[in-house]
Structure formats: C-alpha cells, structure tokens
Image 1 (cartoon, rainbow, N blue to C red):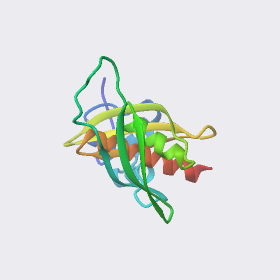
Image 2: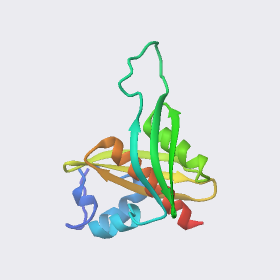
Image 3: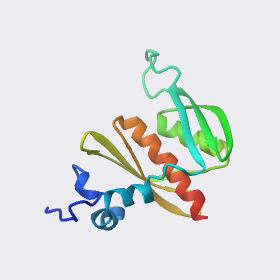
Image 4: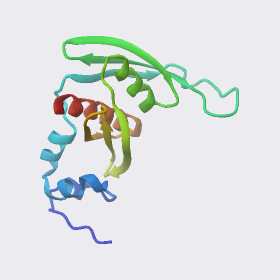
Length: 159
C-alpha cells in the first residue's frame, strides 16, 4: 500500500494509516489546522488532574477488576473533583462525563505512533451526533484521555 499525502499534512507525521473516516482530511490538512479542528484545547470541557487510586493494588482474583479513578474536570467555569470505578481509564472518564450530563459513547477507537508521541483517534456519539476527535501525547493513556475530552467538546459544539 502506498501512502500519498501533502508533505506537511497531519498524515505525514504518523507511522501508520489514518482511520478511514479521517484519511481525506489528514492527507490534505496542514498539521496545525488538523490539530485545531480535531484536538481543540480551549473548549468548555477540560481535564485537570487524573489518577488511578488503586493502580498498584495486586490482583486478588481472576478476571477483569474495576479500578478506581479520580479526576478534576472543568466544565465551563465550574471545576469539580469526580471519581469512578471502571475497567480502564477511558471507561472511567466517559462515566465521569456522563455523570455531569455529557454523554460520549465510543464508536471507533484507533491508537497509533506519531513519531515520539501516541495519536488516539476516537469517533464518539452523544446519541444524536457523531464526531471524530484526536488526542496526542507521549503517554498512550493520556493520549486516549485527551481524545475523549476533545470528542466531548466537539459533540457539545455540534449540537
């Protein structure tokens, strides 16, 4: 398979093909324009502190076990501390958002290397609209969390 894209496009920075739903935009949009569109940083929902409060806990039984997560979310002008028990960080964050009236159901999830960083592409829905979003970070978990927040923001503004 041959990849062809504009030399300064977003796709030129990835080590793998883009998700199908974003290929045309990523092939033609300049890097900064793509980031501004799909990974907004100055929107109403922002993620502050994030941690797994029992991440070092040893497994005591077989099978998946919920972990406990805590976060600081800023929604508009209000900052709140929240927590959730879930099988992973993305599930915990979507549960936290839902508790504040911001539904984000994941439809597609793609994670690829982008140089020294991880790019996470999420297509999420609020039940009425679907939007693609991007998270970009050196840490894969933080990349995924950034993508969920970007998706929540894109869904809020598409209503």
